[in-house]
Image (cartoon, rainbow, N blue to C red):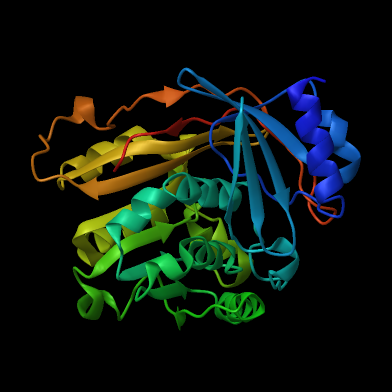
Length: 336
């Protein structure tokens, strides 16, 4: 019997009640047999990683991603928790988890081992919205990040309440503050944030839409979608510790290369951790970190690292999420 088919049968018989809600994004591309378990809402993917080939299956229960990696003569299982969509609270005036949220969590998952090596003591999200990202971060780091503290801010007071409900549903805790970016916190937290995560309002809009109350504050980014981003960057620079990392969602229209050049002048190296295209937009998750030896050369703003090319990924989510098709997703595999 074909080993791939055998794996599918074993997986189906072992956990027939599971439905996929999220995929563990490690440079996955679909295979011709991924539909074999479609009725179980399970996405089986094929990974090409260097010269090694692995069969990868991703399953999701109430709060756990199960990732099965099968090699000839060898198999093992590893699991990571993230926020469960069905447990994420909502409000009409709060931005719900969407493609950009999933891409940001993918970026954090892909860098999880490096994050654990970083041993962040203070983690912060600016613009927590529904709480999906900050909750996922706390869950994926888990007990291995023992001692880490978490803070999340949002200008929308409804988002603070929704995030609180989301965290309570997952059994995690963070300090939540209703403020614009980090207003009132900059001096207290200056130089102490080891991990900063931001999904800013990046959609190009008229300037008069920026900073409005309610859900519009989650996406209205002003001219070229840069008004809020350019406001956040100097704050991030002040908050980050010397070893701090910043993960930020950007849109192609935001000119991410220019953002990287801007940060490079401040001594920050950068790279695109996840690049993903959808029907409506092309997203980039950029990671920044302080590099004392960096040269302020605008032509070398983005640090390139070897990446495994990725085709269209077939991501099957649970009954409460729609079927999404990603155009592309490139994940760098270096350390930093």
